[in-house]
Length: 308
Image (tube, rainbow, N blue to C red):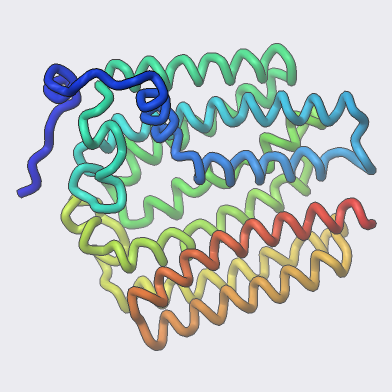
């Protein structure tokens, strides 16, 4: 059994850290890569909500809204680290986190998360609009409480149901600029919602032993490798259909359509190969391609918006 040290025990005996090192520990709690993708998708929602090239005042509004959304998203990530510190310590993928290693106490982490959340909500409420603040706060609750505390340890469909909160960034961005949420924002939300299961299950496939040790009922643990691979493949095709919706609805042109078809066929091809001939290396490649798929898809939406 892997030894798990409580944060308070470790902090009593650990040597004092320099300020830069301590700051890096707090920064690590925010899950920077995940939050960067969240803010990027929110930013695309902001841009799509503004016809034509934004004015300097609107660019400033986007920057402020992005900062507020970053703060709340980072707070949710830090809170997640508190809830999952025991499980994180059992998994190689997450054992390095400061909470799992006992480098930061629960009190320190909770204060950090609460401070970031309050700052982000205040920025959004005062400088953007109440709707964006409430939607962002609801996303925080959806991820940090409903997904992390309730769904994740309860059902192998956790990532499917909980993916709704992770799909909200374009909605937040749209609300920040328009003061309401249009159908275009929900189309982008749907794309991320359907992208999340094949993205995360590709990771879970080659990390199945970690999840088995942690006790989490992830799909490869509860239903096996082959069933999960089939689900990844099927979801890539459902996602393909959703990725065509911006063009069908009229919010994009052939530039986005060409990118969406190429990227989605690539994801489907990875899904097919994973289903027919599994290897951990291929699962890793599928996971990495999924990140590229979403980033490039939304970048194409941005380019298309300005060209046409």
